[in-house]
Image 1 (cartoon, one colour):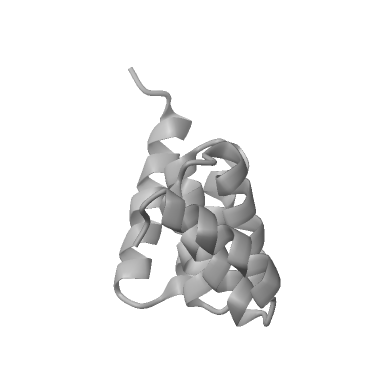
Image 2 (cartoon, rainbow, N blue to C red):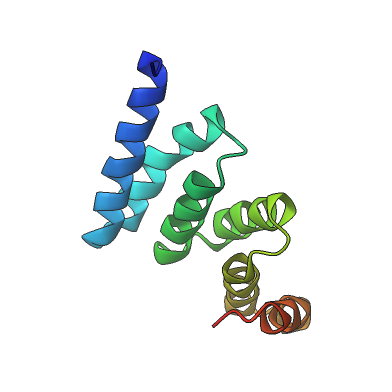
Length: 109
């Protein structure tokens, strides 16, 4: 049986996903941050938070979330590619190159 807090976190995750889907990434990020704070190793929540931050041009926060995701899941090609693109948007092309190479090696699109 799930605990009430787990159900609430899952509901908030789904609500944030809906906000992201309808083009409101800043609201999705606002909802997701407490979810990630409660479950910092939840890769799905961390990925959705990173997407929300990236989509709302909160690049520093996106970089932080993606770096944490890469640390948790080093073979996540999507996270590597997204981190590279986030770094590029911050004019940090040299740092991005290593993540692009890793994403290529992992077969990420």
